[in-house]
Length: 417
Image (cartoon, rainbow, N blue to C red; front, side, top):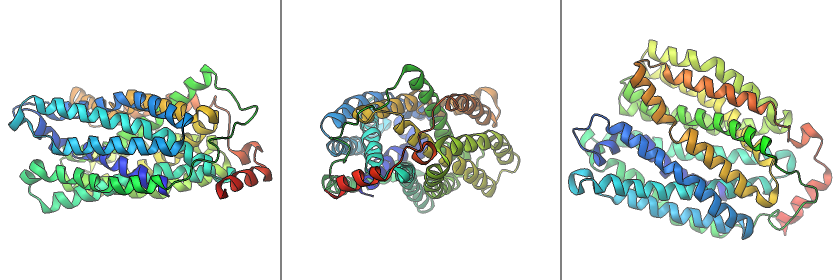
């Protein structure tokens, strides 16, 4: 839970930028610009470019020194990046320096988040009893969306209580500063964590990662990341495409957060019982079948409840798929380089497929004039990921028969010590 709390603190602030994209675009770019929102989404995507560097630098630090030290480093850097973004003056005051500073702080935040995912997820997996590893790792996704839920609630309250001018002038800044206030608490909690019991343990005969497996895992990660960020775009989609208003957009964010928080642990528990691949492939197939009708319903009956129902459906299936994928990838990697490889793989697919997913979706809608464009893009990526996961070996201990009573004793003894 301590890992989950720290993880949630970081993703609250990274997600807040995406949820306030419209307001931030009007602050940092010229008022007469017709593509301010696209520029802002591109800036959001630029932050993902430094994720691989953060994953490599902080991930190697985690594998050599320890998971907890790496998590403290990433949390500190995130706090600096958030504070800088919240306090940077707008275009009206400092001109082009505003978007330049904004980009610099986004790069810093991307570096921090890139270095956060590998060590924190590896820590969860290594502290878990083998038959419940999927459930433990599900906390990674659940706490990310708990953070999204928190930022959605903050945005929803601000949208209801502030005028549009106030929301653009300082409302989004207030949302970011709320995250800054809890960074010291996150550092305090993480400083008290013991080191991972597997950190000092080298297991003989660990499986090696060949290039074919790495490519397949990257494609699986690409499908999951694209799906997550396309569903995250629902906030902007409700406001900009469906024209339903700011507070309805944040309502979709709240629905998404609640659903994923509930479905992620379920997906982890199911993968422990039935196997990672079986649950993941089932959820992926259901997504391919559901995404087209969901977008068609939203554009045909343009109301908030239809949008919320579609968001809940896609978010629930996404949670089942992504939770299984994260655990599958972790279990396919050797412990001695798990934080680095997982963090780097995750960062690369997020940078390439996730960071610019919202930019691509928005561009496709503008170029084609078709509000169903996100569905076609998502289906294509999901099919590629589905083909890749079929070639990955099952890793769940119960499904493979790899768990034994000795596993419980080793892990329990190390955690107790």
